[in-house]
Length: 125
Image (cartoon, rainbow, N blue to C red):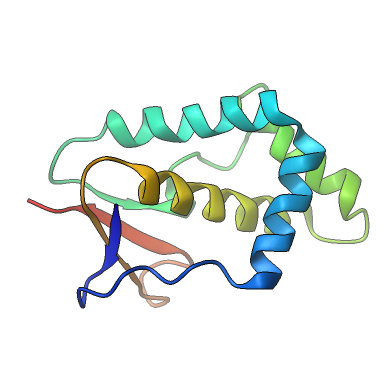
């Protein structure tokens, strides 16, 4: 479960973000999406209790040969005129958010663009 640091429930994805996420997820296919989701779950579960997680820092910048490469491939195919780095990062951030949301532990998050361009997550004690 995920909440904001001011104890509010995390708002759902906006309709435009949800549509964007579904487009890329559909292009990836269920198997690749499941593998990418498991990759994120494994990252989350392997972290120490007191670590802070920033979505953009989790995977590193080179996804070639990783379980995240299908995200890149789907973004390039769907948005050939777009910036694949930006599109992939957006999708990944949404995937991370859904995985934290579905995690059995309570997580808090905040958005601080002075620190990072993405959500910052930390586990409740």
